[in-house]
Length: 166
Image 1 (spheres, rainbow, N blue to C red):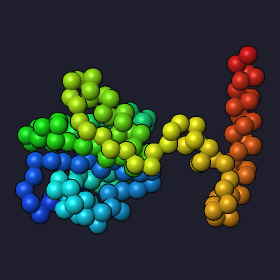
Image 2 (cartoon, rainbow, N blue to C red; image 1 turned 90 degrees about the vertical axis):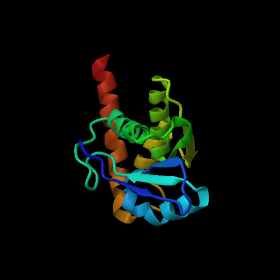
Image 3 (tube, rainbow, N blue to C red; image 1 turned 90 degrees about the horizontal axis):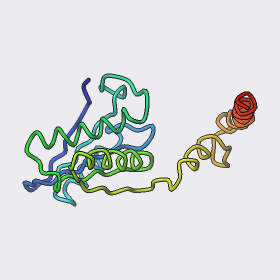
Image 4 (cartoon, rainbow, N blue to C red; image 1 turned 180 degrees about the vertical axis):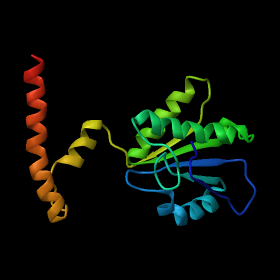
């Protein structure tokens, strides 16, 4: 498997790294200008990458563990190049924040501790689901109609499953 990765370097030499864990529906290409600014502001190398199956990254995402493993692979790649865990920060935005937290916990089991910064994450996973399914005012008309149809169908499926499993 190959992860499509870019590293934006700060103006001054540094041993610090920020691994950007992107939000849902985004690739690192959407953030390159931000990476440049972050690299110069933080004096750290900013690593952007696409999860497997996105952009030029190979493989496919089957479960959330695949995304977590991609983040862990980025950490271990930097460590293989000589970076110290104390100098690595996982930056997660939105759903990427959840995956960054899971990746940090996974590598902590191997006694590797990195810094984690989370931005605009969800407090609870059910909030993620409802934000994706429930119709909202700012949805485009086709999305709003789809959600109005999808929600009752989803409820019926879940209720049917619960009734069937009794």
